[in-house]
Amino acid sequence: MKVSQINLSIDEIPKNWYNIIPDLPEPLPPPKDYNDGMSRMEFLNKVLIKECLSQEFSEQRWINIPNELMEIYIHIGRPRPLYRAYRLENKLRLKKVKIFYKREDLSPTGSHKINTALAQAYFAMKQGIEELVTETGAGQWGSALSFAANLFNLKSTVFWVRNVYNWKYQRRTLMKLYGANVHASPSNLTNVGKEYLKKDPEHPGSLAIAISEGLEYASKNEKRAYSLGSVLNHVLLHQTIIGLETIEQFKKIDTQPNLIISCLGGGSNFGGISLPFIRERINKHRDIEFLAVQSEASPNLVKGIYDYDFGDAAEMTPLLKMYTLGHKYEAKEIKGDGLRYHAAAPIISLLRHLGFIKAIYYPLDEKAVFEAAKTFLETEGWLVAAESAYAIKGCIDEALKYEKMGEEKVILVNISGHGFLDLDAYKEKLRIN
Image 1 (cartoon, rainbow, N blue to C red):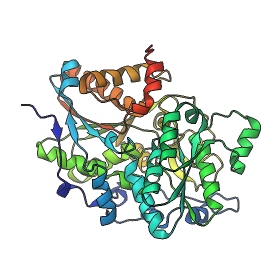
Image 2: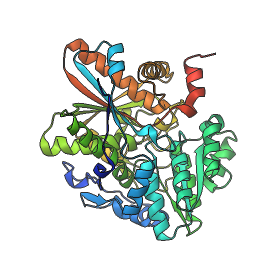
Image 3: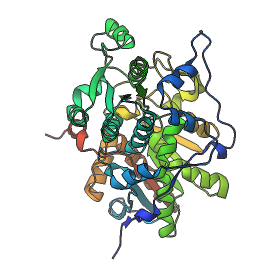
Image 4: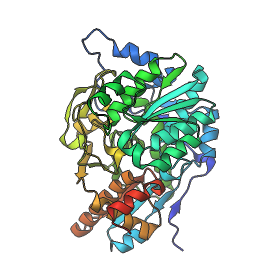
């Protein structure tokens, strides 16, 4: 009997997050203040969770996961399974190429975002914070933080990119069930939002605008803290539990992936699966390639420039060195809205700059992306989120390419979210009556 599922026991769950900063081939460019009289670094110190800010600049390679948090990780289903995609391989008639996928869609809120949401809410509770404020694009991060805040008896406020807020009403309901206050962004709750609405009352919004609103709103009350769902170092740190688990799972079957694929908007799920393997490439000289799959809406790693830029539209964050399309960039609307951010995480950007990461993007119409996800559904049975559909498309294309070349390849793809609340997108893109 062929067993497709590779599991770890609860005793084998990683006890620490991995911080790649000490292992980077060259130092990570530090954030900088902008010369206009306002210190963004002081502002961040005011609005971010103190422990997360400490982790942001830590040089410590391994950072302990607190026992209380570990208990909750286990409660929500960690460690998560790794699968061999036998049926997809058969469908694609693969002989030389093997495909594995990590199941981050199995969290209570349906995505990998819960890994950092729980950590941030835990540290906020310990600090005495009463309300967490955030932004969300596709809605997965907003759902995760709403759940995590509720778990630690905190209030939550979510500024949600308007065009997605309008069509993902079911995910909006989920956030509200967790007790969140959810607002379409731009909103009338902030000066930033009011300025955008003055220019366009039906402004579709963007992640950069929603971040600005969240930062402004959080700064108005010392009992509020701002939580970011991607990009920053501490967010990627919390997500490394994904890759650390996966390394141990591959050891159980005595094999190693040599191509790792994930979608990328800001970089949290890509970093989560990739960074522990990048450590193996750096320290153990393993031949592993890394491919980020993006949308033409925001191909920051492909068409962006590597330079200092703001992380938000209203220029409240420090300047971060990233691959960026510009913080005023207005991306076209797509169903995979989690990929619609103007810049990539500083850590991911440096690794891209140094040649460790390759990147591709798929067209705005998303038809081929959703067709690939349908193939995955028909063979493996799992309905993936719109963002993860990009990773599946990249995986299938790479598998067929290497099979045609007659080259053996072990591909690992990260399934970062489920698609149960993306069914309207599937219906539209695949023209299902």
